[in-house]
Length: 386
Image (cartoon, rainbow, N blue to C red; front, top):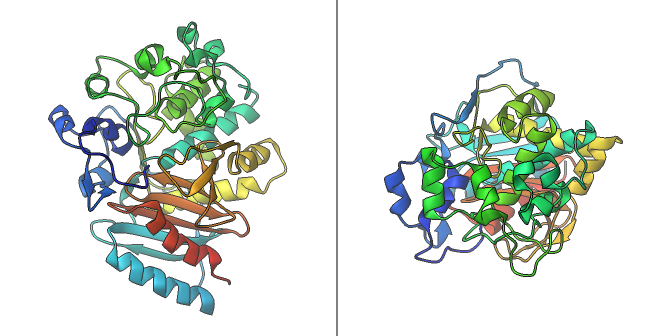
C-alpha cells in the first residue's frame, strides 16, 4: 500500500505478490501499474480468482446474518456526499457499516454482491488477527523467536526475530524495494513457477539484517514480516510453516460466519502469501470487519490482543503512508486525517477504516486511488451521527 506515485523503473513484478500473482511470467517485465500518479489495480487483478495453485474454499451459504437499517438524517447527508465522490473516482465498491447493521452498499460494474475482491494489504490485518487466535490458544507466545518453531531459520537474522517483532513490521531484515514488496523480479518469477518457496527466500536474502537494525527496533513496511507470521502460526500447530490457509479455515474464518466463496494466495509448496492475497465478497469483508470490532470490546485474551493490535505499538517511518504515525499489529494507527480510527490498507485503494469511538466502519475497493481519497469518504461516514 502506498500513498504517493511509484518511481519509474522500479521492478514491476514485485507488486504481483500483493495484487494477486496470477499473471503470466511475461507480465513481470512491465512497469509497475500506475495511472495519473497513483497505484493502479486493474479489474483483471481486483476480480481475479488467483492462480490455479491458490487455496479455494466454497461458499457455506449459512453465514452470519447482516442486518440493515435506514440512515439517520445526518447519515443520509453524509451518504449523499460519499455517493457523489464515489461516482467520480475509480473505486468499484464500498460499504458503510454500523455494528451488524449495513447502512449502504454501492457497486460499479463489473463489481457486484457476488464478486470476490482482492484484499491487497488488507490481508496483513487478517494475518495479524489470525496470529491472535494462536496466541490465545496457547500455541505460541509473542516472545517466541522464529527459529524456535522454524528450525530452517536458525542461523539467519530473521530467525532471531519474535512474533511480536514481525507483527510490528520490525524484523530488522531488508527493506522493501517498493510499496511493501521485498522480492526481486527473479525471486517472484521463481516463486510463481514453483522453483523456489517462501522458506527459500526467508533463509536467503529476505532473512538478512538491514544494516545496524535489530529485531523490534525499527518499523519497516515489507513483505517478509507478515509472511513469516503466517508461517509461525502454521508451525505452532505442527504444520511446519505450511498450510496456513487451511489453518485459517479451521481456526479463524470459522469464527466470523463467512458466507461466500474464498480464494487465498499461497506458493506451490503450501506456504501462504499471507501479506496481501485474500479474496472475499464485500459482505464477507464486512463480516471480518465486524468480527474485529466485536472482538476488540471483549474482556478476554483475544480482545486484549485486538485492542493492542489496533493501537500504536511502534512509530512508523511514514515512507508509504505519510498520514499514519503509528502501527499496531499489521494495522495502521495514528491517522492524521481521521483521529480515533485504525485501518487496514491496500495498494490501489483497498481499505477498511474502523472508528475506535463508535461501531462504525468503512470499506472500499478501488482501482486507482490514494489513502487521502479513501479517508475523505471514510471520515464522512465515521463522523456522521446517528
